Figure (cartoon, rainbow, N blue to C red):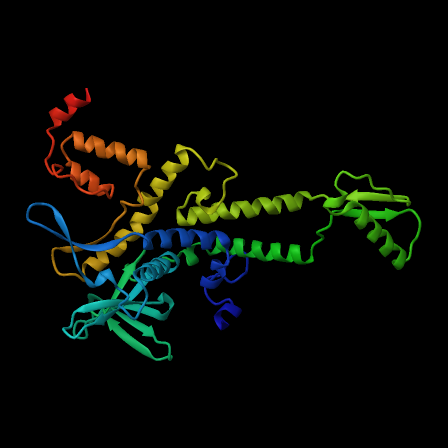
Amino acid sequence: MLAEYFQVGPRNYSGVPVNETSVLGLSGVWRALALISQTIASLPMHAYRDKKDGTRERVASFLDNPGTDDGPTPFEWAETVILHLLLHSEAYLAHVVNGAGGVSGLVPVHPLAVTPKWEIDKETGKRTGRKLFTATLDDGSKKTYTSATMTQVLGPSLDGLNGVSVIQMGRNSLGTGIAGDRAAARMFGRGPLITGLVSTEEDVDADEAAKIKAGLDEKISGVENAGEIAFVNRKLKFTPWQMSAADAQFLGSRQFQIEEIARWFGIPPHALMQTEKQTSWGTGVAEQNRGLSRTVLAPWTIRLEQRLSRLLPKARFVEFDFAGLERGTPEQEIRLIIEQMQAGLLTKNEARRIRNLPPLPDGDATPAPDDDAEASE
């Protein structure tokens, strides 16, 4: 709090504090973070092993429930880790060790509570290539972890030690968004939110002015007066209150704020509910949604997969399953299954299993591609 009060750290052009709490107050940032972290957390994360025949098989591992039974659920665990990566470009996972000395769980530690540094060999004075992590615990004490007791998942980095945080790099544009939110709050809290001004040609006292206003409200306000003709036994002049050019420009800057946030997180604006410049229907948006998996979600999951795979025995690896996210429409899926059956890639029972249908007695035979092609003709 003192650092925030005295503006310790890199300043931004808007002059407002830009930190984890303040950027989460921006609706666009909140939506972008929720979209990426919750989508990734909803993907199944499994461990696999390559077989000698070139196929793979799923194997059980502690990553089926990395938060352990007493900690967060797998969804909550993945969501927290991805949020740490998105905001700070770093995620720290303290190892939970079982009685046999193996890793049985991973506890996410907030990146702001951890300071990494390179381990220095005492004899040579050179880096060993390993890292040390000093974590500040809840009681204020400090604990040092090694690479064997804590895993660092690193986002974009310039030195291989610390990640390049979006809060740091985007402090100017995000700070402008925060300042815009505060300006909007002040405008609606203190600004004139009225329909118009009514003035009289003669002087009236406060009581009479209140009666005139009450009479106007009674005659022209409410659904019961819709379509009615208002009669006022006064000589009054009504001047509509119109939005100024400065107000219109301010509203435009609020829309631009969403586009800036979309750029920082690599999300198409329509995913942040910004649909003024494009339709919400059609193949264009569908392609953007598929591209979101490849260009935004996959880079974050790959970082996590490769780090977690190092904690497993050799020849085993971790992978997020994007199949459900990239699945097409039911019509497209059925058409693909039929084509795979005709090509001899699927049996009838394998196809029925995909559609959650019971097997057929003779459904395990693989049809010859030529036979199916002739039958279709």
